[in-house]
Amino acid sequence: MTLTPKVDKTSRITVRQNRYSVPARFIGQNVRVSLRADEVWVFERQEIVVRHPRLAGRYGFRDLLDHYLEILRYMPGALENSTGLAAARESGQFTPVHAFWAAAREARGRAEGTRALIDVLLLHRHLPHEAVVAGISAVLAAGSVSPDLVAIEARKALAAAGGPPPVVITPPSPPAEDAPEDQDTGSARVISLPARRPVLPPDTRPEPSLAAYGQLLSQTPKGSA
Image 1 (cartoon, one colour):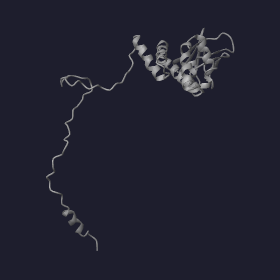
Image 2 (cartoon, one colour; image 1 turned 135 degrees about the horizontal axis):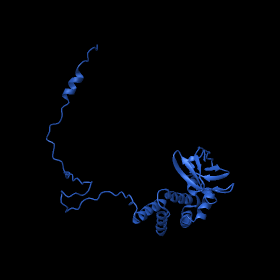
Image 3 (cartoon, helix red, strand yellow; image 1 turned 45 degrees about the horizontal axis):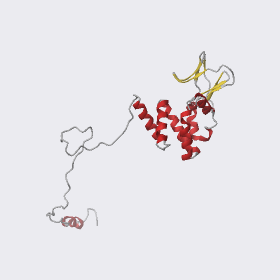
Image 4 (tube, rainbow, N blue to C red; image 1 turned 90 degrees about the vertical axis):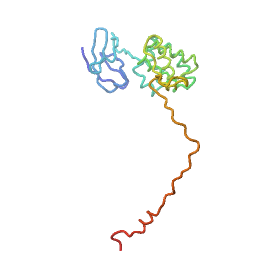
């Protein structure tokens, strides 16, 4: 069975008197929903954006914390009592980040500390859960609560586990002084400029004359009285 409900301002759709969350970017839009025997599929055109286990009763809800992160970043105070957070705690996925949230709020205050937590939670969209948890542990051990450092450490953990290596941009190092000139040192090459003379030689040219310019000024323009 296919339905086309509209996403309300709470980032939910109502299907058979039950409510299911969808990503916040769909608020105010119509989405296509396919009812399966045990799941609810939500489509953006032909692509599935979320699959929820189907609720058997009525007036229930199924929320995913990830669907609300963009909203909660502008309303950080709403995270603590949100149904998405309650669902994440119930599933056990939120447990590893409790320590980071507490440390971030202590270091940056409740609002900014919660925003730092949300930035870390957004990493789950691009990195595996285990890599993000490893990044959190490494950053907390270093005494920091920087989401950027969590991202770096998470990518390092992913690379160590056999995933794609982290992208590190470093300036090219100059070759050793005793290296041969024709040795390939990479894509960057160091070009040595000739040393500048400390004292310029005297200028022996004659001084310029302004006589020609004086003759031009002494001529009467055509058409003048």
